[in-house]
Length: 291
Image 1 (cartoon, helix red, strand yellow):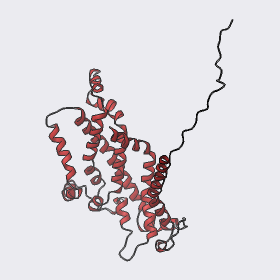
Image 2 (cartoon, rainbow, N blue to C red):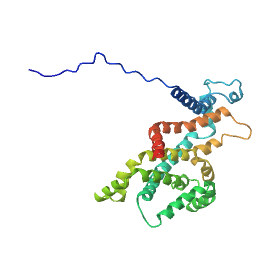
Image 3 (cartoon, one colour):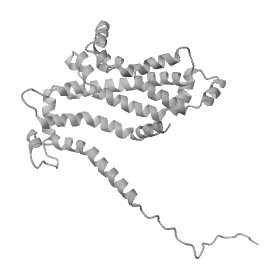
Image 4 (cartoon, rainbow, N blue to C red):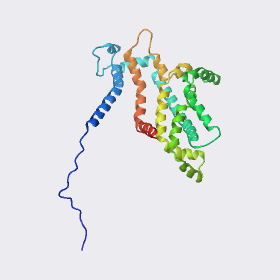
């Protein structure tokens, strides 16, 4: 005889009531929506002006819908400068700086965070002291050094001076100190892992969110860099995007539609990179702050 018991629904089960939406919650989302729209408006306005002639910027009331001049404005840009070659140069520099800077900063930060050696405190203070020096102060020594190496006018002169990042070392060191358990490293040493195996198999997987944030931060800085490329690049075929776009502005007037189209071209790759890495980017900021 079967003794299987079937569960029966309660006849008088009370349906769960939805919690009432609080006014504070509604106001919070309204404020966040307004803030998001205000943040996105400059990008929208840049796109609108890029699709209109220069006279549209002085029009009142202004046009709020896209026009039909985007292709013509881009054609004007390409007739004045080799913008695609400049974008390729900038991409090479930004990717090279980002990858190499992440490797150097993570190795240095891991060493400072989890290993003891003579002079550790003094060396870290020296690294932090570089925050007090403006980057413009190093322009002349850097240029003389690049000239001695014969790198002036070459993209190598943009990559190598940007590899040592005090902010990157500080950011990753703080994250690694609080996130990597010392016991885990001791267990790795007992299993025979040397420094680089600990770095590859223990450190990097744990600090991945911080690396994502630093990678985005470094890429954007390298992409937008203007002053140092303007100083050191002497070959017109090696110009980066920001330097090339600066040649569009003349003393006899500016074509604002063309300038906005050039700004749109410059910012689209950054938006794409941000969208691709947005999840890790936001996680890196939030987790790093909480840690």
